[in-house]
Every structure is written in C-alpha cells, then in structure tokens.
Length: 274
Image (cartoon, rainbow, N blue to C red; front, side):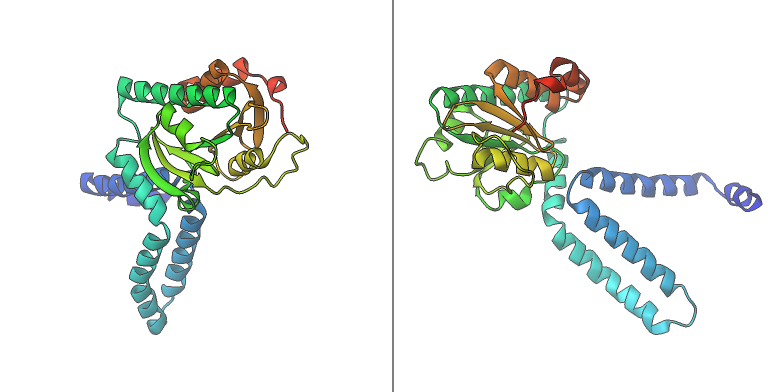
C-alpha cells in the first residue's frame, strides 16, 4: 500500500494525460476489433510480446534482448498484413463515421436499407426465386466476401431481384451487405455444423445457419421451392416470415435501442427451427 501511495504522489498532470492517451488508444483498438476474428490473433500476439519482454528482462541475455528488439518491428508488419481485412474495415468505419451517418441520417439510411431488403424478399417469394442475403454486423466477413464478386453498390430492391434472377451469373451464392451497401454477390458460405432435421430446408438454409453459427451476422433466405422467407441468427432459423414481420425483426436486431423489445415481440415459442 505504501508503494502505491508513493507512486500516486509522484503523478502530475502531464503523467495523467500521458496515461489517459495510452489507455484511449488501447481502448479504441480493442473496440475496433471487438467481435471480429482478429481478437484471438491479437490476444496471442499480446501474450507472446509479454512473454518475450519478461524473458528479455532477465539480466545477461544479450543476444535474446537483441532478437526481441529486432523482431518487434517485423512482428508489427506481420500483424498488419494478417489483420489487413479488419484494419481496412476499421478505417472504413471511421471514415464513414461508423458505417452510417450520425443522428437522424443514420436512422433514415438504416430504415431505407431494411425496407429495400424486405420488399425484394417479398417479390422474390411471390415469384418463387431463391435468395440468400447476409447482413454483416460486428464480426468481419471479408474472408467470405473475397469468395464472391465484389460490387460495392447501394442496397436497392431492384438490384437484389436482378442478382437472384434464375440463371444469372451471380444468383448462385450469397449477397453480403455491409452498412447500407452490397459489397459482394455469389459468395460461398460455410454450411451448418448442426443437423437440420427439416427436409424442406436446402443448401441455402444450411449456409444461412452456418454463417450465423460462426459470426454474429444475420442471414435471410427465400426458398426457391416454397417461397417461404426465413431468417437465421446465432445458429437458429425463424421461418414463415412476411414483409412486415421481417422489417420488424431487422429493426429490432439492427437498432440498438430496439433490441430489448425483440424478446417481447417474438418469444421463443414463435421460433421454428429446422
């Protein structure tokens, strides 16, 4: 306790500002990679750096200390290369103020995107045209985006219907949406690890469940055989949705202020898992 009091007595305003700046930088970095696949890698790099620093602090290890100092810069470059998708996504989020505009403009863009998705799903359902739409959230989907054809287009109902029109070049695969833009089409997704007992659920449904088992994404499926609209989240699938209910669910999941009302509106007994 005496040592702690002595250390605190030596702090001045400049030291406090220095500590707060370092803490802020670390917090922002952790906030940007939170929920992404980079978290495990970053944790491993931090543990490795701490272990090397601890061993290097032992007196007499001259060669090892030189190796630690020389390898630190190389390690930083390697981490930057490995985390390129997450870094690019983080910079994109910062440049676009978190993916949407601030305040009411953000709400307008989000509502427009949800409406366009719901309208396209209803029309595709009426025409019995299959579709698989994935909405990226906190976990980055860059690895899956790179398996398809990158578009970078605004989410528009007509464009989604055109992509999933039968026998077109991009209809076989998933559309991935980031923010309010379609970033890629014809993307390959992992299939569900769990056994889906419903025989009416095909490859699109298994892919929707599979991507939501591994990430926090939301996947929307339109069945080509039955026209049923379904939505998958956290490895579970909700079926028999209409346009209105799909809009309500998407708003509840994508708007932070609406998440608490999701359970009240759609209790667990309404979920039909396949």
